[in-house]
Length: 239
Image 1 (cartoon, rainbow, N blue to C red):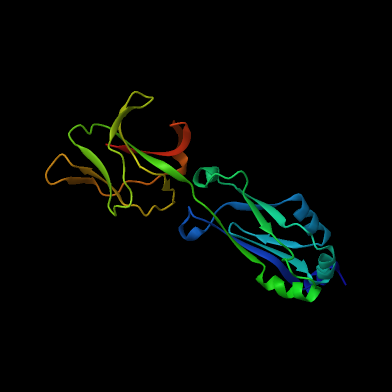
Image 2: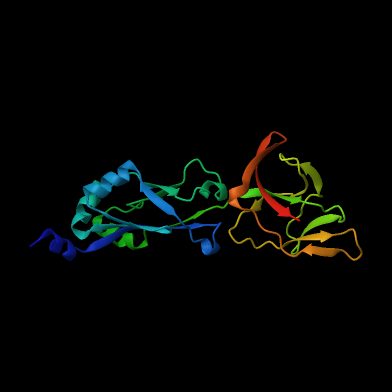
């Protein structure tokens, strides 16, 4: 009988599963995420011919049924680790800063003392991990001639407040009216905030722009204020 046929006849047991979500994306569905096993995890995978299935949102580790007894006898004392990495070059911009994103999967949960109990416990060996989205100061830079308006930036739902507009000269010499959020706001691919630009120099005030764009990870920068380094998302609005 060929190796291929024998392989097809093997049954497999799920050892561990993990689902990864990210606050930045709608419904938390991550993209371009890779799971890279640490040295110990890779050694176990190779030694026992484990099967690793993964996509951008999940990881599943399976073992041939013929290897289960040997895995139990070995019983790694430490969790198996995977480093989470992304092919998206802006990943670190929209993700909360962490020294290292790691996924830790225990093969044997505490309190399990025999082989049969371990096999039964594998059905519940699942983890859900959520990567937090970055929060940044949203800095709107209104470029162009707005001199005939007294501008105010408002949140239609009154959840967020912005500082009064202040002039700022850009590196290219242009003048901008700058509005900053009073606190750091969550970066989202599809922001739920409804930010509007109003002219409050007329009676009644007039809405100039019904919905301003949200922060983009492509325009993240940092500014120092009162001895602290703050992430700032620059959002340009051109007239």
